[in-house]
Length: 631
Image 1 (cartoon, rainbow, N blue to C red):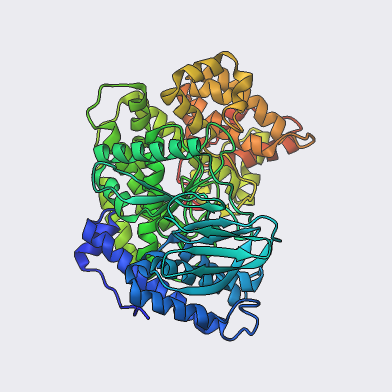
Image 2: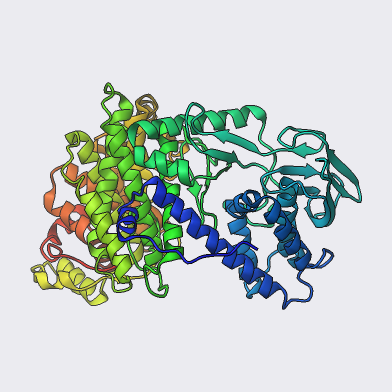
C-alpha cells in the first residue's frame, strides 16, 4: 500500500515552529509527517488485531477491508490520503490501538471498534468509483462513511451490521435488516435517509481552506466513542456556525496573518459542542486528532478567532511531538499553569505555553490593528496584557526543567524569545492594572488550593501571633511549601471573567453592579464581593471577603473551604487596591502560609484573627520568596 517515510525538519523550519510560527511549506511538512504517523498506526493495527481471533466478529476479516483500501489507493490515491488524514481517523486509530493493548474496553464491542477499518475502506472505495460490497458496523441505526455522509436506518439495535454496496455507475446502497438507503445521485446532496457532511470554505473569495462542520461522525473529541450518534444541526444553526467561522477567519487575516495561515493549512474539521451557559466558551482538541477543534460557539468573532488559534497551535505542536522527543518520561503533574485549575505535567505545560503564545500574538494584533477605539479594544488589550504576563511568569523557569530534552529546551527558548519581544509593547495603564490583578488572582488562588506550608513554620508563626511576641526572623519565609494537588480546585478565573464582562459588555456589567446578588447567574461561582472588586470598589469588597473567610475557615462551622480560598485571593487584591502594601504582599507571596496561620491562631486563641492585620504582621517573614509548586 502507500509507504511511509522518515521525516526531518530543517533547523530553520524547527526554529520557526518552535517560536509559534511556520510558513506554508513547513506546515505542509507537518501534514506529510502526520501521514506517515497514521500509516505506521494503521500497520500496527493490522498486526495487533491479527492476534485477536474475535477482532472483527460478524464482519469480514480485516484483510478484506485492507485489500479494498489497496484497490482504492491504486485507483484514487488522493481519496485514501484525505481519508487517512481526517482527524476522526487519528482518533479512531489511537483509541482502538490502546484498547487492543489492554486499555479499558468501554461499551463498544471490539468488532465495531476494529470495524472502523471496514468503514474507512468502504468510504474510499466509493470515492474511487469501485464496484464492491462490504459489511460494516451500524451504530444505533446509523452508518457513517468518512467524508461522504451518514445513512440513517431506523429500527436497528445499538450495535449491528449493515452492507455497503457500490457500483461503478455511482449507485450507493446501505442496507440492513430493517431497510435500506439508496443514493443514485450526487452524494453531497441530502436524500431520503442520507445526510451529507457540511463542508464550508473559510474564505469564499480566496484560497482559504475547506473545513468540515462535523455533526454526523462517531469519533469525537468532546465525548466518548460509545456516545449516541449526534443529532444533525438544524440548517439555521449550521448556517450561523458557518458565518461565525468565516467572520473569525477574516478577523485573523486582518489582525494575525500567521494564525490565518495556520488555520487555513491545519484546520480540517470543527465539532460543535452544546453550551452549558451563555457566558463561557469550552474548547478542546486531541493529540490524536490533528486538525480538529471541538468548541461551543463563542459570542463574538474575536473570541472564536482566539479559540481557533489556540487549538490549531495544539495541532501544530502535536505533530512536532510525533516527530521529536521534547521531554523525558511523563512525570506526575507538578507545574503551575496560569490557564488551568490543576497542576500540569511537563507535556501539558509545553502544550499550554505553545497554544497561549499564539493566542497572545492574536490579541496583540487585534488590539493594535488601528481601528477606531471601541469597548472591545479594551478587552483585546486586556487579553494581550494578561497572557503576555502569564507566559513571562512561567516560561523562564520552564526553560530549566530537567525533564526537557535539548530540543524541548530549544522550543521553550524560542517561545520565550517570541513573547519577550512583546514585553515593551505599551498597554493602556488602567487595562494593564486589571490584567495584573487577573494574573495575580489566578496564581494566588492556585497556591491556596494546591500548596501546603511547612507545619513547623505555621506553628512558630501562630504561637508568636497569639503570644504577642516578635515576628520570627525572615529566614522562616524561605521554607518550601509542599505541593498537594486538590482535585476540587475549580473556577480560578471567575474574577477574570467579571473583568472581561466589564471591558467587553459594560451594559450587562453595570446591570449586575446594580443587582450584585445576581452575579452567579452570569459568572458561575462569583459572589457579590467579586463584583464589587471588579468594579473598583475595594472598600466594599474587603469586609465581604473577610466575612467569607471567617465563615469558610470556622473550625466548628460548615462553611465552604473552597469559597474561603477564593476569598483570600480576593482580599489580597482588595488590599493592594486600598494601598495596604504589606498585607497585600504577604497574601500574594505566601497566601497558603497566611491562611494556615490564620486557622492555627483561631484554634489556639478561640477567636478569628483579623486577616489583614495578620497578613501585615506576616509581611516580614514572607517578604522573601516562598517557593513550591512552580507558582
